Image 1 (tube, rainbow, N blue to C red):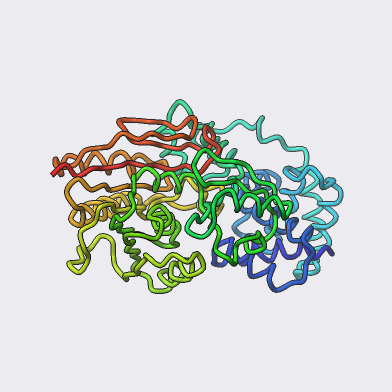
Image 2 (image 1 turned 180 degrees about the horizontal axis):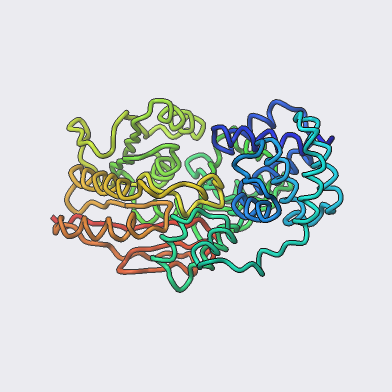
Length: 436
């Protein structure tokens, strides 16, 4: 029995009961003394199996007489992880994946399932999903790309000509990007620090942004403890750059956790002015507080606040950041759990987004700027929220954006990032100016 494969199955079972995949994996890895190579194997096998779950289940069910839902969960998880290795891990021989899956059955007290697991995986090993005939396009795309039908419907509706390319893009591994904290260190000195420690990096299209090639913990990167950088995607960095923050500005981050945009705003201010960082959850606010302390950003204050509810204690602001709660469709490659998230509540979510934006407008100074952003590509949560807001607030207009990232989609001064075109997160940014 291979411990790495057992841990992957343990994680699958825990996620099935309850819990987010990243938290489950972190807990399992921390509780075992594994080599870096073993950790990497468990991570790839577990995340990959979660990511391809719909596809794996479809193929398995084709070779079973009993519905998967009525089978022992341990047996299902063993077969899922075994089939993932066969179909998607080129460095694992089929016989090894099958043999190891069979050997896991007694470990999970399912010895009687050994024959079934062996037979099913052998049959599945030659299955080609690309040649399968489905009853309709929706089902085909959902199964082939392992995404809930609700999400596929949204993508087909909003992007009919590139739906399949967008779904393919959901398997693109996101770049690991950081923002240099120029309050503490210059970009040149930070790059030298990386080079001196044999850390490879690539320049990004935004100032003080780098892609770092590193497989270990982020805390192991030189300069982390000193607060020389923080992890932030290029799309989020761009949203703050688009705000046009000037030194001395008073900035409100209305939906701040986990804090990256507050940090970016504080760095843009060069520790001048002020950033009011809001979240309704005290524990999430603490994350921001701790992050700001590590980075040495002293111009951030923290307020427990619901973004959709007007708070008369808040000030008037030059710039307001509205990175609103959303469906998260754009960051599915980072969070495979989101692939199976129902979109039933998306209309309520769009109303909440509109309410937050409308409340933000009440805090804004004349000639001030609101940056509205989401990590989704759903137009109901993006363009339609902005259109509705502008119809009811004629004293606002969209500002022109100048995005240095190649292949973004610009529609009526609103910017959408699609992963398959840009290589970055799916993301939306609109910049609104208060005229009077």
